[in-house]
Structure formats: structure tokens, C-alpha cells
Length: 221
Image (tube, rainbow, N blue to C red; front, side, top):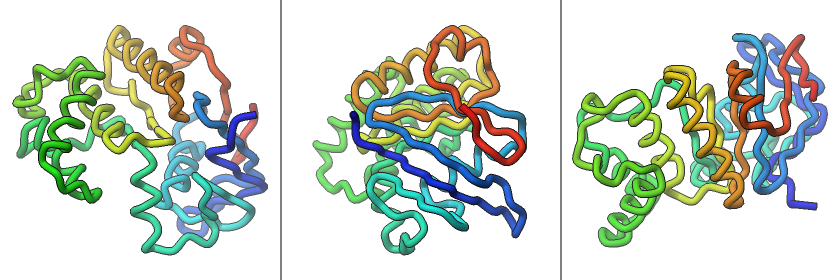
């Protein structure tokens, strides 16, 4: 039995005093990939945000990477987030700097100091994503699929134990979306736990894994 990276027991989540999800039970094992599906507004993003402490856990038991999310202090949150990679649908790249400088910014912000080590790590994650020959480019010079691959490289910089992908194929054509999902499966096989929030059921059936459905403020498997 692999170690639980995420363990929620009877968790309730609120947004502006409104209950978004209740009675949430969820276990995510080390190296496991699972899909989170459900309509827009069903609570998928809120659940993901609770895992990196952007939304507090209102009640229940919640543990992420060994940290008690009901008691986590503000000063502990940056350390938690260093162990979590996040892939956003809208990319959130810095458009005033190159691909290389986008990644360098993250490493500096998370405490890296040695220039040679930073160069090596940036080169490594870009190679893994097939983007090593695009490091000098500005984000606006890249296609949507290339931007998403840079976002995935950025998420992998600190060798996260958990990778959260919120609608990672939402702005991509079907072939590029398929490539991204395939790559996320490979990342899970290498030992990182991966949670993918998606509407795209054709990709879920093409690359099967455990599916959790968000509806009526609850999770069902």
C-alpha cells in the first residue's frame, strides 16, 4: 500500500460562507493519477485550491504531504507549495520575459541560489517537455500547446511529490491535449501523484485512471 499524499475525511469547504463541498472523503496514493470531473461550479477548483492552502478547510480532517491542513500556519504554506506543482489552464506565464527567465524566476522565488544548478535544472525540465530549443523565446512566440508544456516544465522544477493540473487541456486542440494527458500519465509513473481536473471525457477514456466526480456538493467515485 503506497503512502497517502492526500487524505481527506469528512471535509467541508466554503467560499464566502457558502458550502461548496461537504462530506469529502478522498485518498490519493504516492504515484497515483486520478481525474476529477464535474460541471463548472461543482467545486473541482475549490477542492484543488484547498490542497495548496489557497482555500481553508472549514471542517473535517485534511492532510496533504503530511501537513494538517486544518491547522497549517501562514509561514508553513510556502514550504508546502514547494512540494506541489500546479498546471493552470490559463498558463499564467510572465509575458515580459523569456521561457528561461520564467523558470529562473520560480527557482529564485523558491530558494535556489547556485546559478549552475539552476541552469542544469531548467535545461532538464525543458528537455523532458521537448522544449529545450525554445528557452530563449518569449511566451507570445509560442503556440498554446508549447505554452502549456512550459507551464508543465515550471510545475516540475522543484521535483514535486504532488502535481495538480486544473483543466490542462481546456485551451488546446485535441492532438495537443492528448499529448499533455499522456505526459501527465508518464509523470505519475515516475512516482509523482497527479490530480487532473477535466471536462474532457474522451481523453479520460483514451487514458483511463481512477475518476472522482464532483456533483451536488459531494464527491463520488
